[in-house]
Length: 90
Image 1 (cartoon, rainbow, N blue to C red):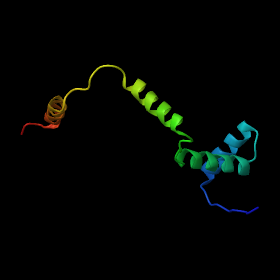
Image 2: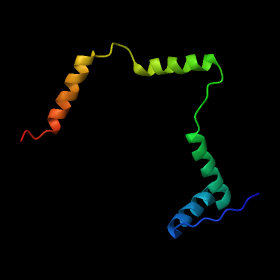
Image 3: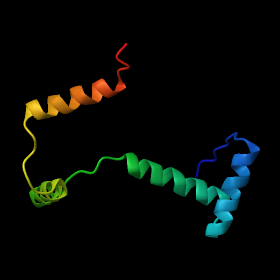
């Protein structure tokens, strides 16, 4: 097993130690767990099969709700109106 030394501010060390104690683990285990969680969040999910892809897009469709999207001219009008609010007119 590799040994890693890190330098961090005392206040961070104190907060990390406190958090580790609350969870009933050592500081080393707490830091390893935090690093693993961060890597897992950054790792892209790969679909295992076509069914998962279909489920993903079905969930996206449900999240969109019902109804039609406004046409492009309506989108542009909303953008222009928003730009006008930020403009002082001077």
